[in-house]
Length: 132
Length: 127
Image (cartoon, rainbow over all chains, first blue to last red; front, side, top):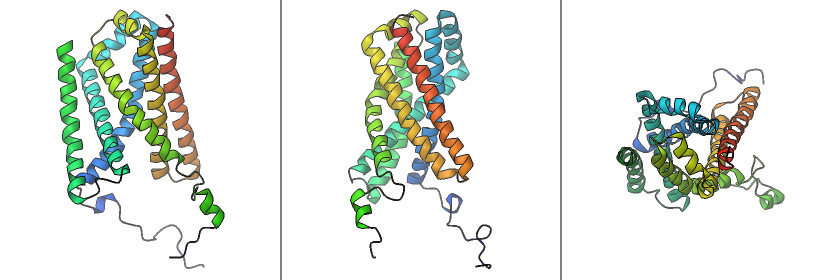
């Protein structure tokens, strides 16, 4: 078939930029983005644990870095990503049970995910500062 | 619509990727485990933050904390290996780059996992 253009100008199905962003879609995308962020965030966990295993001097160096303003900002984002991804995962469990697919339910779940993740993250940090 | 699957294919139930629901199932098993393990981990970090090296080492010398932390690492790393594999398969299409990325994913997860496990065990065994 010489006339068939196999690569260049074949029509493509519409992709993300075509659609108006809606909350459920944004939550779905955020679930993936937070997952990917947590993936690289585990480097911080490994670094911290290895620092603890290396001895007090190196541990203090890493602890100071993570306790700096920038460090705390990163860890705050890490906390939010973790909480958001977990709530998003719980939402997937609801769907796995065959529930929560209705219009009202999925909107409610999407709202609960974002409001819950922000509120829980702030709560965890408030607790963190209180027990210090 | 006519079912195009062969009777044998139907019995095996593995689909076109020949892997069935194994990936999905493992993702969910580690996800359920992570709900509990990561909750423990968050509580642990909150209780240790601001502490000295001696505080952290003392906590990690407790076998229960040590074992739970090892489970956090194993379940977490396995879950993220599965997740990143899906992301790569969704967005990376060239065969060469895709296989490199899939391999890099495994190497990354193995390195992070093993590094963290070694650190916890070293502290736990008194190093």
